[in-house]
Length: 218
Length: 228
Image (cartoon, rainbow over all chains, first blue to last red; front, side):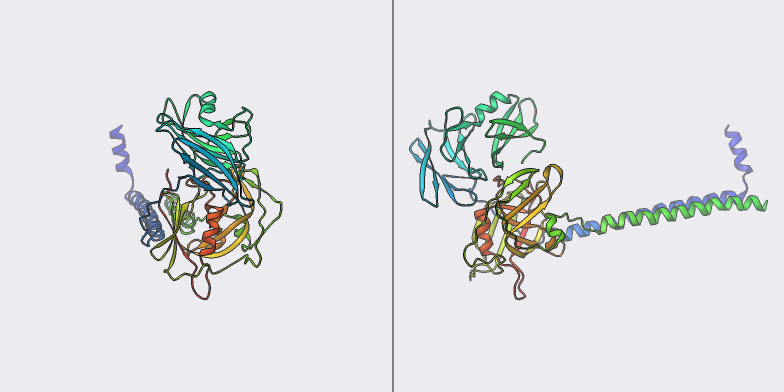
């Protein structure tokens, strides 16, 4: 076989070989040209990116503790939620600014070192609901109230998200309840018990049900 | 023999032409991808027509393809619906910093902190980073955009301050504004705008300046990387 190829090569006319070489050179030339043009555009793009990056001196701003408080206005400012603490007795009040009407919607004695906080996003966008964070040593709870002080169908003034979640979604653990995605939907960030998978749920307050989401709300 | 020779020459010329065509095609395909800036439209309304003050009564909005109750806005007497200048101060230059990593906004007058609060930046669309200036201020306007499950159409968006720079024009619709459809600040939640609690948006709206008399509007610096 090798011998046959040698014979064939020897039999090729010199002009054909040189034409083949020329062709090969042309192809190599164009491939190189292509690479150079591509590199040119890539470099240009990187230059633009680096130019458009923030250039002025950004200050190192350490945010103050604004995530929780013991008083929080509703998003448009018409109502105020206040959490009073006298030793271990917590009292929750809702005040309507227009008529200065203040009603107590909840009170509870917390065993030390448990604490109750008002999260920054406590108010639902339509001011119908509020939620509190109850910090416990083992697991935090999140309590949802009607701002009118009305009772839920369970006869209580609040709904415990942790209690409902444990019953309805036993394969996940709540990491945080961040705020309201819509007037009746609280965002519940969770982690799978058997893996590192993070999943967000919506807690629908009127139906007291959880809806698993495809998007994780960081 | 001559005929044979010609037949061998043609394929070479053909390859040559093909190579040239490939190079040219490659440049044409690559060029627009590289040279055009892909700034998405944060508000499809401002991308079609000049943004304006717009107020509706008893309207319904759509957010994440779900109906949303729209609060009515009652303007106070003599309230300017498209104000330009904010509060006059002598403390120094006004500068707004938006940190995407901490989802916070800090407004300074010189070295003095005017306000600091939590915001929601882009989740379904990216919030652009860089130095911007306020382009226009409107007491309220309508915003729409997204598609499918994240479609939104929101009348009466309160306290809107559109911002722009050389790369991001004002008409692309990026702005700081109040929010009545969610309350999840401190977490990315927008289509590219900087969402704020309405009371916070009102405070900064009254303080910051739009461009006037040759002076650019208040500087807005957006920096940091959103948590992944």
